[in-house]
Length: 640
Ligand code: ADP
Image (cartoon, rainbow, N blue to C red; front, top):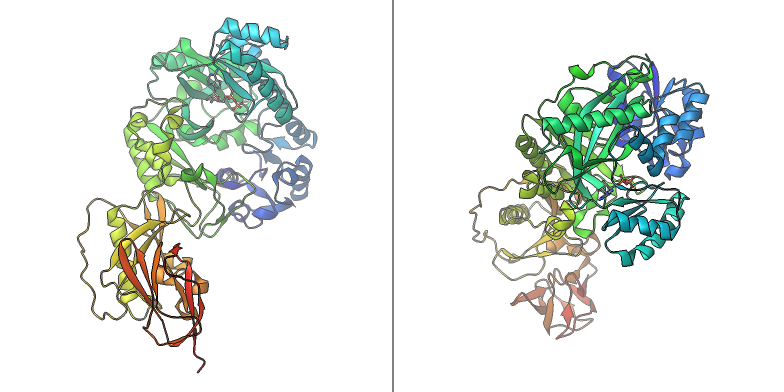
């Protein structure tokens, strides 16, 4: 057995591999870039080697540095994880040439599966059903066009060297073919340095179903059943599950047998995945499921397979790489229950899934499910790598229970101020279509507006936050003093600012000494979490979490640290119109003196001087429309 292992990766997968290696008594070596100097995978490993600057092409993608790190630390083997160098045949070869053990597929298998057309022909020869289409050598536009016509539209043009969803064009009608071909070839040449394409029948109700396979160096190959990864956004997986909904035993048997044939065709060793595409327009049936491609590495979504089979796939990888036979025979493997994984990302689904970076000031993960993560509270999501925060994996006897468990877990994620997609995952997991198992790869796109609409705090949450802010303010120990407002009612408005944070604007009479009347009736049913570290985020903010979304509430009297009450800045508490200006620049004013009146939300608000002083600046004029927090005037205190 290997006794020391270098992990040529970062983030959750590096941590995941370290965990199993440690359990097996294997010494672990991490590698890291500048940005990851203090990353969790570095903290978790027994040893760590710096391999260069933050950009991956200068660190995690530089094979020579990684091999040198293994040599320097005496590591016997290298595990590539997924992504980065995991499917780089030249690197796999270089590792072997350096006398190290490569915990992955052989360079031969990686190459055989690297090009889509060659892989498809190989599979065809091995009796694995492939998507109907054209794989030919003849790349002339006329020939490609006539093949597309023969296949029948819609068709998909795919770069043979493509990957990651790039270099694909759907064509719906013969007249559009020539243009699509030109643009696909251009993209393929630019992205992969190879402009050859193949043509496939476009499957209209496609489901992505893949089979986990495993081979050893003794010629054994088994499958560990299927995963359904149909829930995708722009060809990127979002939620994965095992087994696949609606898969009957006969279809499973035929699909998994095809996957094993595929693996045998390349003498596969290690963990691999055979991806299939299913035409689900009339349920799942073996004659409408076709080979798409093989991934010659451990997949992101491998934990769902681990959950239903009870196998630690990383342990199997390490055993196989050490020359041991597979720990189980096919007839010793079976499916137990249902597993579902959600990919928690640092991104904002409400603004086109824009990645969100920065320090994870608050990060609290549910304890009800398995969490695979490479970060913890206080760590940073850097702009250099995939912004994944964690994978949440639920396992239960039945699909609906796994789904509920995962949905609740997503709702419990507390993440701020970095944005997360937890609320989006929660919505997906509660969607009736998903609950029915009725999912094709177009599912998210079909309902994207509703699924990504900015989350709104519930009335219960608003009320709770308002009470907290008001009563905290009421404790005279707090630094909060409502600025120059003369409304006696507490809460008069909520609004959403540009940063999509909800700000509760609370008004209270400056002079009032008794608490005003306030309706404390709470609505039932909503769960409100308050982060224990909310105060870390500035003291004046309260951050509340609901259904996976974070809402930041700020006392309007304290908006902007630079313009706090002591500075004498008079800011518009909400957007409105200046009605009267009672003072002139240079005039001296006394505390509480009326400065100006603003009309907003159909009410008039009088703004008064916070202390004795002079009107140093006056930027408000009667009739002017002002934005929230616009500087209306500045009072300078009189020097004592
Ligand atoms: P890549 O290597 O770029 O990931 P794949 O061949 O694996 O490309 O396809 C990626 C995704 O594109 C699949 O998961 C599926 O959603 C879609 N897709 C691929 N082939 C077809 C097809 N023939 N018809 C419809 N959708 C397809």
